[in-house]
Image 1 (cartoon, helix red, strand yellow):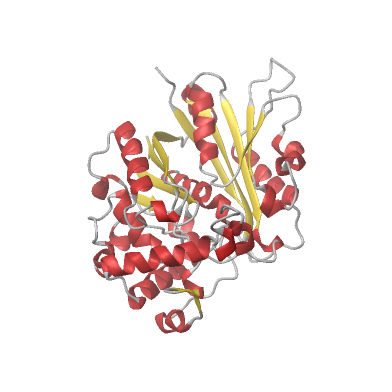
Image 2 (cartoon, one colour):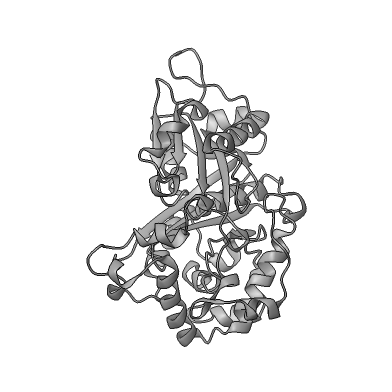
Length: 386
């Protein structure tokens, strides 16, 4: 039987619009030092008698970092000399899957995960995501993640009746939650009128509907049960995981069907023994890169009925189900770290370390990550505390 695995420590930097004065290594070192304040991190690379971190995973992206093998520069901070050092690119929550598999299989006992990204480095985030499309058919027409999201938002609005007023309500709520999150900086409160007056990016997506450019880093330590209970008083157990990738070409997909998300959620729920996701979680952290995605992904996760996302917003479903009390991605997290930050925020809630944004008596949580054009690849993680 596979071993139980827990998140034993969580740390983040702030997420600012432009950390021009910090290198990647500096942001990651800040995270590592915060993790070491929580648990005694040792590295068991070349001394067999030392029991400690025996796998390090870096979350980074060559294009965002503007260098090949971008994790190579992180070796010192990750303690990766003479040992197992791995890399996860694109959706950061996959690093938790990787670490979970390594520990549950008996290959490792403790895993260190540190992810970083400086979106401000590129001239345009859209130039980076443009590269994700094939060079012959879809790049020539100018597709990037924002343009693809616009197509999905149009289709979803037609299907669900989601309107500009409801989208503004989502953004205003995200800013209100973000005001309670010390990791979110440089983000002012907004009125619905200001949101609806902002420039159009990709109809119906407005500028303030999109997650802001940000720089930052996040880290976690995972451990097997026997170690977790020794090194922390508040282990957060990983109870379910699931992921799924939809077709590459947008024309091959129903952009409102949530195919990949439903598959990912069902796999995670089955492993966690969850039959009713509407009532299963005290906290939900979903990756809403654009405002319309919050109700759309809520449908895919089973938090509300199919086609009821717009009504769910009007009925204050996000408030009742404690969705994105951190502010979510709309408050600003780098694209590749979105899911990893959602898992970190969920774990903080279950460890009762979320400060002013703490949900009382939170015992169960869901973390969601997404990557690719119009939600091509989804990941779902369920968590629980003792």
